[in-house]
Amino acid sequence: MSAAWFVLGVLAVALGLALSIALHEVGHLVPAKVFGVRVTRYMIGFGPTVASWRRGETEYGIKALPLGGYVSMVGMLPPPRAGQAPRASSTGLFRQFGRLADDARAQAAEELRPGDEGRTFISLPVWKRIVIMLGGPAMNLLIALALTALLVTTVGTAQPSTTAAEVFRCVVPAQEQQARAAAGETEECRPGDPVAPAHEAGMLPGDTVVAFDGVPVEDWDAFAAAIRERAGRPTAIAWERDGRRIESTITPRLTERPVTDAVGQPERAPDGTARTQQVGFIGMGAQTETVTGTPLDAVGLVGTQIRGVADVVLVLPQRLWDTAVAVLTPAERDPNGPMSVVGVGRIAGEAAALDEVSFGDKAAMVLSLVAGVNVALLVFNLIPLLPLDGGHVAGALYEALRRGGARLRGRPDPGPFDLAALMPLTHVVAGAMLAMGLLLIVADLVEPVRLF
Image 1: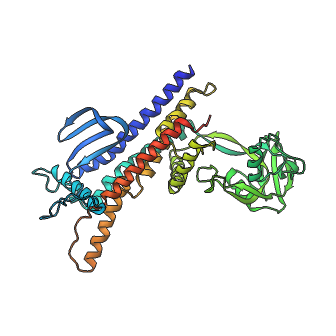
Image 2: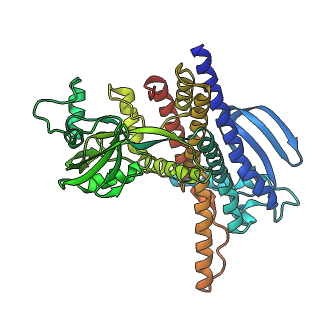
Image 3: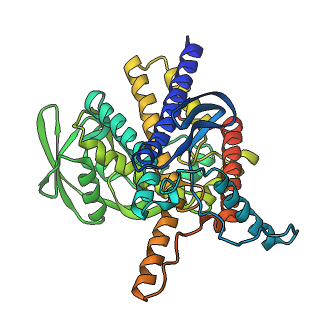
């Protein structure tokens, strides 16, 4: 039965991913048609066409490799300048780059037909072009918000409470914990380790903190922030146990603790070790509780996910290098690093195959994964490099600035910005994306991220 659940989990997340890609392209398709652009193709996937059909002037289809999609609009590039002759064939690097641009312009011009005047993408005002290109990422944002709102209002989200799940007997710096774990030590404390303040004050698992430094405690994050700021300072604390209130004084100890990112995961230094900081610490872990909320709560949760994905994108080369090292050496794969669709599907299958998890929780995990994938698609597509959507937006914004500057200086309109001039860079970026995808697929097959 577990194998069947694994397959169902993989198929469910694959279907969710396919629908997300299809809706991403719909986000481009709809505004393009509303603004009158002639759309020639709407395709899901790449490679050979598996099935296609025509509705009006647009061909819709599915291709063999469902790893993306695209919408083709006429006039994405300005036509070749009047009187401009094609570049002679040459082996020179810069001439070859010029040939790439010329070929792209010529191919775009071949798609034009009588009646396309005013219906080309490049002829639209800048703001309309930006709306079209942001339509895809906006659709991913809407999907993530809708799925997250569904989860928040029905299943709920796991949040730390003010009740102690565990009370540590001693305080061990984060790097020392890593060293002991690497040495295979299983004991929590060594003789001579400092006693943890919570243990010393008499707290036990199951106690609920109700006040700290004279302030009522209702939120774990606020409580943890107050502890970090009170290192070395005796502080009044109160907790409840079996219905009775217990009051004491506790002195948070200044110690080395991991730095966490926007989604609560440990941040990594360039050498792969966890980043740490010196903060106050009492040695108490919080119980989690499932809390339902309102659809508005989904906005904050998705915003936190966006910040987390953006943090990964900003250091993507380092994360990819770490992934390659994990594949080629005994180093452990970072569970917070990038994954391919293969890795996401594997996690979905493993989550669905858990025997002790109810069907509702399995469905919630799959929906959460699909929401996370849409956040990743949103952030990644906004990178200001061609052929990504963000690259087209950046080109349109540059054109607006260039035209505005020309008007201020009383100079002639320079015309549309020719993205064909960036065609060599576009090929480099596309090649890098392909290499990244292959690396992550290999990593997810050879050294997958294991969450269960």
